[in-house]
Image 1 (cartoon, chains in turn brown, red):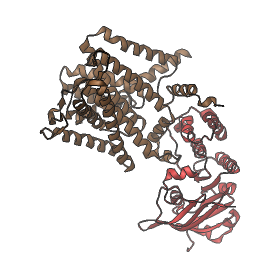
Image 2: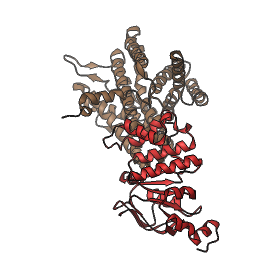
Image 3: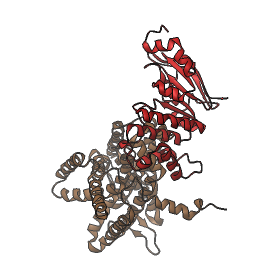
Length: 359
Length: 239
């Protein structure tokens, strides 16, 4: 007789139960109704805006994957990575190289997307292995990861010569690669090329929802419990029989794979990738998004990233350097006023009001 | 009765400071044993060597019939050693329940996580604090929570480094009762302790460490009557 504990239905129920838990803010019907309304509003957005604006909104969604990945590594596992852009850039270049060589037919851009994410994630696994098994901790993780991304940026910037090609794909040094095809879905009659616009937006929105829910399940699982415990007291975790280095390495690889997903999608979106995507400014921005929203909660990270990105772009109209100064000031204000993040602060405040109303 | 722990010729030095000077020590399965000694005798270092936090310069550690000398800490815990540190090693920002979940989730043996957590909350009298952040507990409660976490990994041998440090007399007595209860469930206990009243309450046998070596071993009465032990503590023994 099969125990009720092991039936697929009970397994699904147990997975869905993990959508809520101590590691993620938001629970109960009110939260999920609000989430459904937010998704419905996001789905309706292309009906109210022109194609360029929708393509721009798709650009915001692209970065949320890197932010959520950094949230896992930094906010949950306690390892501040300053170099998620290394995996972003590597995957962006990988997508470009693969698609320029294979073309866009037969859904090969989707294969390229998966391979690029795998390459970025694998690179993060290797870097994570050497860091965590080499007993690098604390601020030194930030230094090592920043070094990795800056080395990659410097390397890619000197690939201008004709000898720097992989098959058909020229790396093009400082100017970067361009001309790769966008994501293209195989379809009866004619393939659908997802240029920035409503179709790409819907694909990205679907991916964001899947990744967000998947991360909620992961973070409320026993794996997520251990990550949070490592952040709080890694010594004790080791003394409970867990291989702390393994968990840190896996979390870092997951964060790297999410950054890689952003990188490959970014390349597919804009059909270009340059070494500056791995530079110092690019490396610092995800830290600001995640810190401002709230690094210790995946919902806060997601909301904070979209809001800060939209704000950053609005400010860029008046000058990109001014926008960067404002971003720096925003980080300082967050650290001083709401170290847990502005969105977390707001959500906690709202939670208290609801509780008061109920009582 | 078989020995659950056998240490032979264990030696560790940090430069000129020898913290373990060829320790030979054995512990029978089911024992309640205390390690005492003045500050700097090497008690905590001995625990660190048993836990794999220090690699010994020489010697072997046999636990439950296997040589664990070269195993990493987490591997030793998985073999059945567990520890409660002197300063409570808990997750202060997490709730009491979350602390227990992390400790228990990989050691359920068919039991449900909820059942095991409630069993331990009963055992440590922390039911009312289930959702309290562990850092907000009193010092004694934090010590009990860590004992619960250490027990949650289903150890054969429980190492306790000054389990009653900072506790009130009532809390100390209650801790002693908890340890007797755990020992009755089959867990061998080895504790470092300074409070001799507590040592009397829990230990059947006592080992005195001095300058990284075993000075004497015996029952609590034998240790108290030993002419050299008081001199060690008062600093007059020529050993």
